Image (cartoon, rainbow, N blue to C red; front, side, top):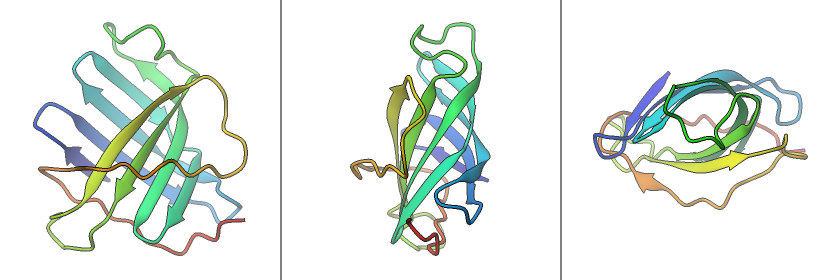
Length: 129
């Protein structure tokens, strides 16, 4: 489980593990930032070097969550592991909400925001079909 606190107001706890079948994955995500407050399961994972993109459907929302972030909608995140043991140089970025299940094994544009607390760990080895 990784905890990310980009600027002491945005918090994410996540775990994404590839199943070895294409880009299928298992895991979970809890995300809180401003009015965004939701939990999602992780069902897709693509790893390129020390970068990873993971996707999954929202499973639970907070009471003040924006209306477009509803149960069943898919969310996506990018992460980067600098390989430093204390998380220095690691990054994280929410890519937003999407209405449908992504086709194939999508890779988001790797826009990364440096984290201020936590440690992202990406273990390459997932084969992209």
